Length: 194
Image (cartoon, rainbow, N blue to C red; front, side):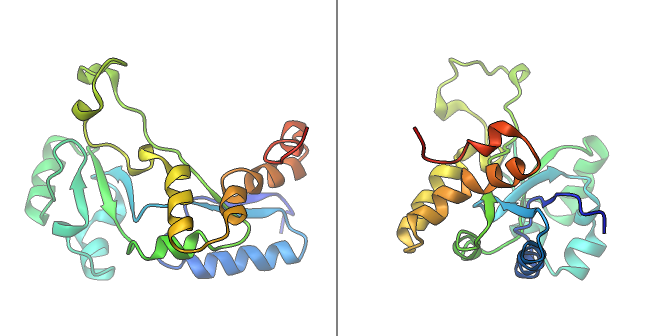
């Protein structure tokens, strides 16, 4: 209605095909809209996220805590009881949320006009970590911190997704839309040029 540019963030959730179709149809009508995904079947949020309440996560969406909600720090899977206990102690504790089958990643990397993102959460230095901390001693962290672009390239190779499709997803697709908004630097980025 406003004719303003818009981006659908992290739309690799249930219903992603509908979101992609809506974006594609809006672009056909001349609108500057796009979406972005990350190549992981899990995301991260706080334990007290509203959508993780039993009424929504278990009863409405049909998930089980035991194989979908994992503690970032310990790697342990939550039960409804252990989640309630932790909510009392640390309601905003970081958790990994496994919400999609891994097979969907291949579908996402084949969606034209979509960007790949890598917005993993940072490591917290006050946890005794430093730049010298050996990799093996780093705690479990956000899935996207493991390398979204590299994973996208590997999955594309393994599933015969054209290389230029994935290269565009990791560079040109975002730059194109931002350039259309008038950002001069983005009218040059994401392109092979002298």
